[in-house]
Image 1: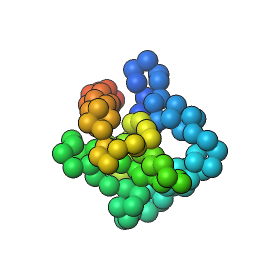
Image 2: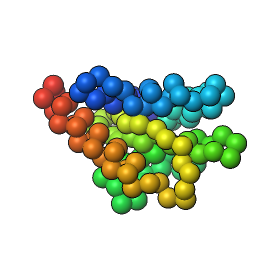
Image 3: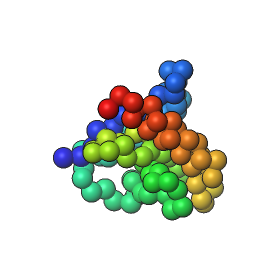
Image 4: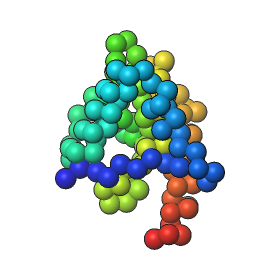
Length: 119
């Protein structure tokens, strides 16, 4: 069955994950897109590609490795089968930087606040 993947959009119309995807070189973008397709289509994903971040407010990461680089797109579940992608970054350290998790949590709170009004 899979998930419905949505891109988080700020109140002023910016889409951080789209900006990240657009910045990637061709072959990297292809692999990241492939991982996102797996996330959309599969009910159960190996932790190689999709993992909950420990100590976060239910923030998950879509994980892609290309060469020696690791690419991450952070996301959260927004009810039902909806998965909202917040933003992406190139991971350069062992642990996911706290500022990236905080950014995703801020986007999540904003998204849920604005979308509760519409439901």
